[in-house]
Length: 157
Image (cartoon, rainbow, N blue to C red; front, top):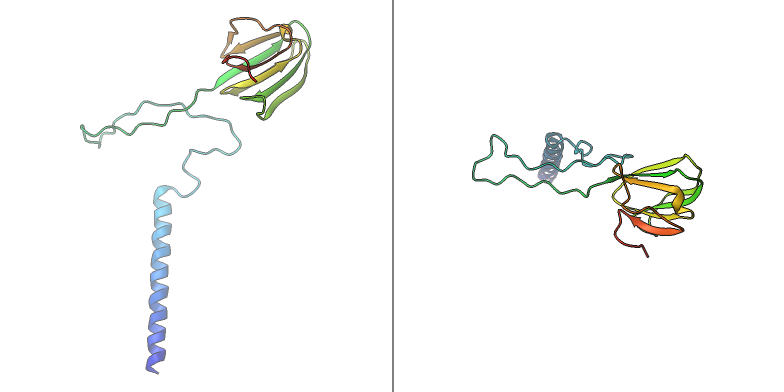
């Protein structure tokens, strides 16, 4: 009978310790906002946060340096417009091996608008295109058949 009581007490103690651990974990998740409230990840969007200069909080010591914000790579708004005629166009993410963002015939008057860090462009009749990066035209107009990375970092390979 004594061993049965001892086993029951041990079991109850184990259950108590496990419940305390689970309660502490749940309290911690509640205090930090849980898994989904961090705000750093947004499913299904291409939104990027703007980098903000660090600011000292009122409760921070004067000699304590503010925590630095992580720097983000700037995105550009690319507008590719077929102004002077049709153009076969292929646009990929960052390089010739990147994900396909657009592929097909861009008819006269049509435009492709993308917000990305960099794009790789291959165009059949590039002279028919006007390319604007952040609202500004390229320094030199495109000619012939091209394959390049924009913003210009030299020809893509």
